[in-house]
Length: 247
Length: 302
Image 1 (cartoon, rainbow over the protein chains, first blue to last red):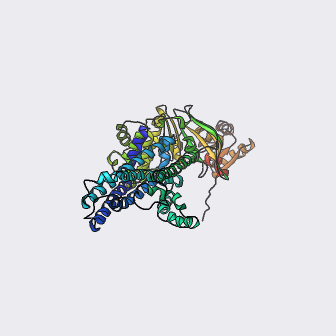
Image 2 (cartoon, each protein chain N blue to C red; image 1 turned 45 degrees about the horizontal axis):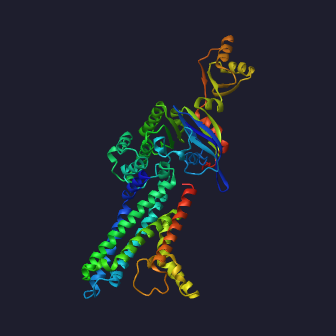
Image 3 (cartoon, rainbow over the protein chains, first blue to last red; image 1 turned 180 degrees about the vertical axis):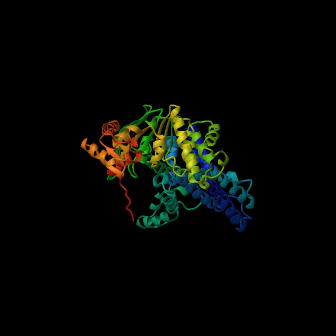
């Protein structure tokens, strides 16, 4: 497994698109944080959960979805360029390859999440005069954000394993939370109010939100477990298909 | 040694490989021949466990490929030179493969030098010519210094010097006692390179033999005869049951009678001979004879 992880690490860092994506994933939220925190009237407020949600979580969601795209590319690029055949010829035990990819991409999701949210938090705290109290008030939200980074990266990786071609998998991955769940939420809520809490990404976003009206949402930990279960199901389906299908 | 036993692969309604059994021996170059769409590449993928056979099995030195934890040390394969990420450098491509099989990093530079890509190892593969990609694929196959090598069309895109290099390289590998299995459409190259042949058509085994056996079995032998009295000699030969094909009034191809018998007949009848030579068919003729009924994609002259 160690050899496979090292191999995946070399593959990851040697593809320019991955590095560009990570740079965008870190830079875009940081820029958004500076703009939001700089322009919004936070001068008199202490950095707390409300300000945190606006200046750290909202911009970081851009990076969360980009990490999901990174997950899709983690295996989708292998199928697109047929390098999956070289990969499986070098390591025919496919579970080893998939396990190594899951670890490497999960780690990158975590590191990117830590870098992005950490920078956003420091900048927002500095701008919003909350440096002293920041970790005392938002640590749980920070932890939730990092978990979401990893889960969404794996979700993208699982979806890429199922669909194989990134040209199809990336739009599906992005439209699912950004459009499909929005429409589906309206439909299911019109049938029975509160049903939309069972939509996976809506539950996933609940992991990072502690402020607001959550009467129609799952409890935070339950929502996290529910989204994690979806992620595991998508990953497991992807693994099963990759192992079963011809390369 | 490669052993394929009853390999079959069905894609929905199409049977791409049909009950294929053959052996590939060490110490010789074994050519893998067949028309386009005959199942050569599918067979290669089945051997390497990339595609799941509908039935049958294949082993390398007695073990299925998928049983090897570090297969690059046992089997090296070049399936398609294009199976490389275009923005990755040649060095990174090989390094990732080396890491997966716990091979030393130094081996990457060794094989890059071996195939003549040492100076361009840091360039992105997308900038490479097809010939350079072929060399990179050969370097990847050699990475683990394996005992068995599979090459699918290794001469594709190579210039004449490259074609000659790959021929000598493969023969050198075989001379070291390795098992070398190579598919190619270049029959002239195959006749210079291969010792044995596995020939398939429409997924089925058509022949498995040495090159000489294959040519002898599937082409006719004849005797080229040149004589100023060809008309007289031809009457005598036809009386012995020979059939003749005339190149010109003094030269004929004689089928059905051995050269020694023709010489004796001419001497007995005082006929002068200017040429008497045994002729055999070419690999191309034998190949076309065997595979013609199984050619799936055929062009028509305009």
